[in-house]
Image (tube, rainbow, N blue to C red; front, side, top):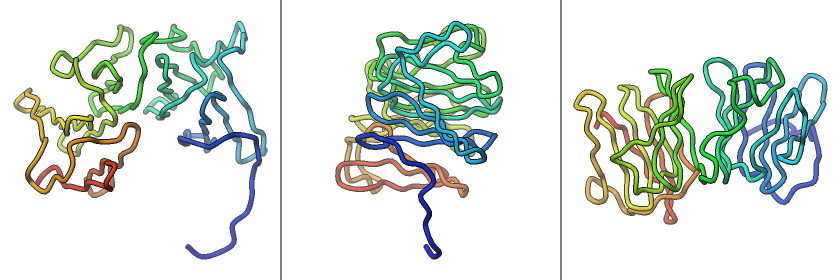
Length: 219
């Protein structure tokens, strides 16, 4: 990295644990136990949203312990927390534009994935859920007893999930789940929640306590 860094914004927090950006270029920052911050790069404004907020029009984030955030194809930002899911619409400045304020109440949610089929996949401590607009999240039976830490959709549409008990793959053509616990170069079966990567060339990365596991799903 070359050039000179510049401090754009300062705020009090213990640490930033997740970041994302929406289609307007606004930066979303999550700080443990302190809710959600949205930084507008054009105006320099920093807004903080907490679960204690009680705005009758905007609504509020469902929990202040944010685990992951993800924009979808409609420009909304999905927020996984230690007590369910929120969805913020920056175009309407609302947490209720979907017709609900919170989903999966009481469930620790670790990861999010927007699929090419239009679903939102939610990885939780109680398994994997699939959400389609207008319906309740549906539990994926084959993953019901697993802590799902991170989710990736490969280029071929297959779904890959990291868990403390290995990697799990959903083959969309065969409609079957496969487990990958050892062999094929895997050095660990325990993967860290909320940490993963999917590159433009379809390489997938999951994090373990011993390092990183990279692979091409087509191999």
